[in-house]
Image 1 (cartoon, rainbow, N blue to C red):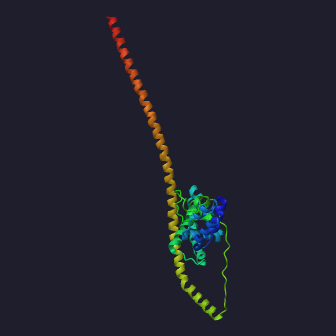
Image 2: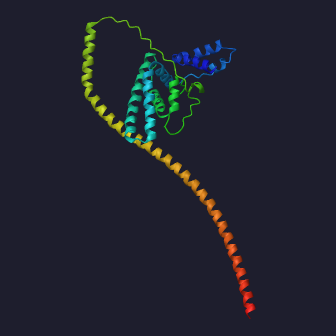
Image 3: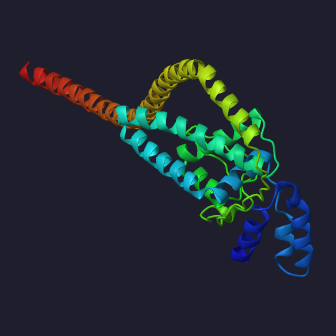
Length: 292
């Protein structure tokens, strides 16, 4: 049943967002009387951000593969504490997630769905989570997200309610080829020339501003990358200190046990010394009496 449920979920989560609920209910009605009816009926409608990520997974699998591969390399660099490599990969991560998010907004727009900056932030946060956490990567690859994801790369992410079904982890969404829109073009040389001239003028005017913006962004990226790399290093050091503290606490407990045993042994030795001293005193007194 698991494979059949995943197949049905894969079809439903590939639909336009507005079609999800009626299609799900219709499918559950078709399956009435079977073991699949209830699980299909329980499939939750994805949030807008989750739907956009699911759309991206199906329509641009190559971009998602780049995101997840870079994420795996980033996690490996973080584990190895390779500072320079970590900073470089972190910079790539930010650039790639921003670019892929922009692409996802275009895909959604082609479907007639407007993605607000707030939703775009959730999409980018979900892509970042997939790069920082291997289980989040599996959730994204499934194409069965229900909610947006967030991860720090340190704490474990609870994905129970984040995907359509727990069995989604390890599942890979089916790719969907985008349907090219039908274009009906009417030649208009004069309009084309005017549009071309306007476009050239706009490019000329914005070149300087674009260069300044790129410089500012590069500086901001560098600062953020350095701080993120430093944060990852500090988190790794904290974990090492925690492990060291646990070892010291164990050693302290062992030392307490040994101290207790040593104090007992000392008490027994003191008792033996006191008894020997008393016996010696009695022997000395007896000898003295005999000597008189």
